[in-house]
Every structure is written in C-alpha cells, then in structure tokens.
Amino acid sequence: MAEDVIIALDFPGESETMAFLDLFHDKKPYVKIGMELFYAMGSDAVKEIKRRGHRIFLDLKLHDIPNTVKSAMAVLSKLNVDMTNLHAAGGSKMMEAALEGLTRPDGTRPLLIAVTQLTSTSQETLENDLLIQKPMAQVVSHYAKTAAACGLSGVVCSPLEVRDVKAACGNKFLTVTPGIRFAGGDAGDQVRITTPEKAREIGSDYIVVGRPITKAPDPVSAYERACREFLGK
Ligand code: C5P
Image (cartoon, rainbow, N blue to C red):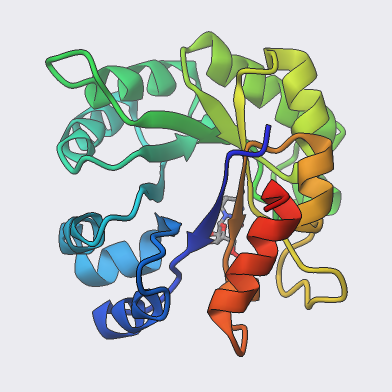
C-alpha cells in the first residue's frame, strides 16, 4: 500500500543538497542518500539531514563477505537512519549477517531491504553479462523470497515486479520501487519504469524518485505531483 514518496538526493555535495532541501521550507520529504552524496560528505550528510527533520533511506547497497557486511551494518546502525539496504546477490549468509550487525543492543534496527535486480538491468544484461538464463520476474521473486526467509523487511525492485514479489513473500513484505517517470518523461538510463499513478495501482509501498524531481524546473511542484499521483493526495 502506498506509504510515501522518497526523493533520491543524487547530488555531488553539501551545497547542492542543502540548496535543494531549502526549496521545500517546512515540508520534510522522505529522502534517499545514495553513494554519490555519502562518498562526498560521509556520515555528516546523514546527521545534517536528520537534524533538519527528514526521514532517511541510506542506499549504499552493501555487497561483500558476510563478516565485512555485518561490521559495516553495525556502524550504520548508529547513524539512526530509517531504512538501509544491500544486494540480495550477496546470498543468504550475507543477509543474515547484515541483519545481525544492524540490530542495536536494545533490539531495534532500521528497516533492511534487499536490491533484487537493478531497475537499469534488462533481460539481455541478465543473460549476456550476468549469465542468468531465467526470466527477470523469476529471478526477482527468487531473490525476494531469499531475503524474506533471512528476515529482511522488503526489497527494492521495479514497480513492474511488485505483484510477483507480493505473491511470493506476502503483502506485508515491503516493495520500494525506483524507475519512476512521469507520463511523457525522459527514461534516462532506467529500463523497467512506470508512472507514480501506475506504481500505486500495482501496490508499491514506497516510490523512489530522483531526476524527475531533482532536475525538474520546479522540484517542489514535481514532488507534489508525485505525491498526488502516488498517494492520491
Ligand atoms: O533519477 P532516478 O529517478 O532514475 O533515480 C533512481 C534512484 O534509485 C537512483 O538513486 C538509483 O541509484 C536508485 N536505484 C535504482 N534501482 C535500484 C535501486 C536503486 O534506480 N534497483
């Protein structure tokens, strides 16, 4: 069920990011901090954006040996983000270790979700580059089921895969869906895309919207349009 619109803060540094957030005044959109901003600003990005009152999805897509991911997640758990993620391709041992690392001594933890296949990956890339000779939908559902079995809260996937993921893992298993474009918008490098309205119909829980908002002539109106179309308000 449509929960919220998350803006991908894909900016190269602090000044661009804060100037963008200032446009929203008292509105505090849920935001995603990805590799670009995190590598530029480090954990200061998280601290400053939290201080401003935003919820944060920290999108660092961890993928390494279980022990390294566990230790890295233990560090991230201290940043007080609301959601973070890893690649399901790292396997179940890595996902279990991640969950352990992310769980604070008091038992609380941010939501942990898994990337199934990137929304920029086509069937052709899956077969020719990754040597996975299965339909995308089947690969995504399998990765989602593995993540659910490890105790994760949901997956990042294309809206086009939400129905399959919910059928495989149950309705409460969260689907966070990038690859969102307004009707008539530019797809850029995304392949498996849909509109905010369609994402709602399909049953996405959160949509992640980057360039259609950050590169819009009026980002606040573009955000409001995404909310109207996705949340119906
Ligand atoms: O600009 P755009 O709307 O394409 O941004 C989508 C955001 O979602 C980017 O930050 C990208 O890294 C992220 N993402 C994605 N596909 C995934 C996981 C994350 O596009 N499977």
